[in-house]
Length: 256
Image (cartoon, rainbow, N blue to C red):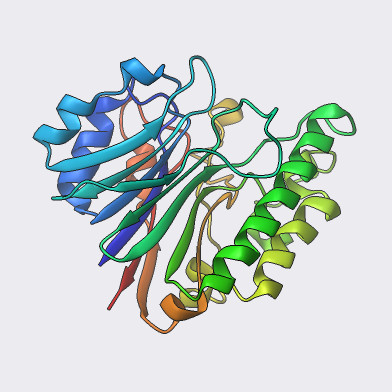
């Protein structure tokens, strides 16, 4: 089984790129982020023609998450991250697909920091940690995939001082990601590439893609039951270099 995550950064604006990637990569499950589309604007028909069923939570201008399943319909289990009923941002969706619980998440960016956006980021991640612990307690096979907007380690960002004050690299952000790993979740990409330089995001500005000035923001975390089934993981870097590309590249894992 191949499971992928892809921050598409506007699903309708980049639908040709998405469909081309789906046709080439053939993920069995694909988690999408930053749909930037209303619920009624989701391209369900085009994705169905490509062979994918879908569940999604849309939001205009920003946010929006989805889960696609090849040849089947995901069963929606959760439309929002629990813990704050006042939070209206479309950042989390959860579904059951072929016996696996899949979450697609788009964590807050948190900039500028310090400030209310950074506090929202940390509070959102605390809610994620609490829910993740509950998911682990079920003993079910679970995947938490998406754009975490956290650079876990210094080696996950190109050599620069320009991000020193950025929310993505702050000690509090990194500590929140580490707490998930301490619960027992496996960082699949790093497990399969323990020493390599890995980037999944290259900003459009300042020629960062041609310079390979990237960051690792997109992660697939596996529960203990799925960790034993991990056989491969990678980044479809070439997708980032295509015309009209998202500023993120897809990340994928293969499970036996």
